[in-house]
Length: 215
Image (cartoon, rainbow, N blue to C red; front, side, top):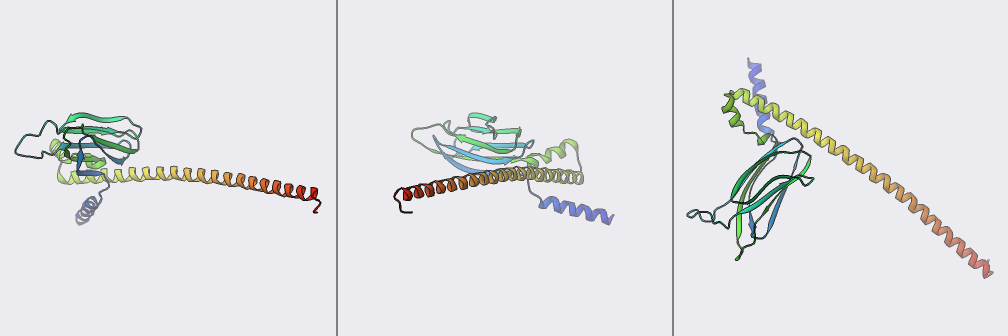
């Protein structure tokens, strides 16, 4: 029983220390007529969720109609993952179809006079995108089972991330080898051209001196 308790304690400690999933929470200003984009490298088949809202500059009054934003989230290949036009707040959820940088762009229409809007944005992906409180309430899962499931999913996420990094490393190695091969070929042909030019110069000088009867 003590051994099981110790193992569980170690697993809970590991679970607390591991924080590999991506969580972006921020607040930024954007001027009317301007665009602000945020990118994040997301692994394929990862769940991504988020929410956004325009901060009311005066809490004593309703949010002005002019305080609206347009948001578009695109994949590395340019496909739309989420789009909303003239919204004061909203939420999104999608599953990444490919690896790479996903881009969330916010845009505010031009106004006269110009003004600045403050936007609160939260973006989660991977394990952090799962709502564990809902899972516990829906299935009446005990706390210990929930910790074990979360630990299992975290280990799987780390394994997938390591595999993803390994694939990227392999692709970079292929690119490096290809670049080195091209550079070696270019250097070889450059050397041949230099030797050919030098030989032609020597032949030209020899012919010139022979005509002048200097040699």
